[in-house]
Image 1: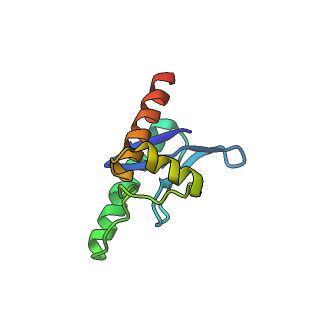
Image 2 (image 1 turned 90 degrees about the vertical axis):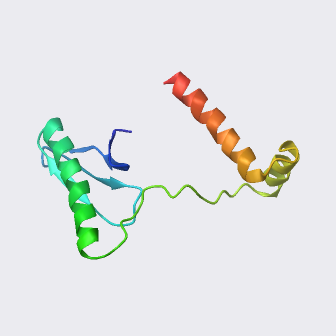
Length: 113
């Protein structure tokens, strides 16, 4: 997936064959923030402007901007995997165990890339 990053926000990169333009939106937030351009360089600039405008608008409205990632999420595993994870954690908190497992998987994925 093609993504751009700026000030902690991620933006998508899409192409419209119908309109012959590039476009995207801020990803992983509830608010809808779009941008578009005709070249990659211009799309990157529009993305950064969109983030800056979003943050400025939130500030003017005295609204807390959506954050792409809060650092917590729910995981539904099913009872068998939940039990197996608790047993395998050997007294470590399940939260710490899952964080370690995610770190290991991310490291392997990065090595494969």
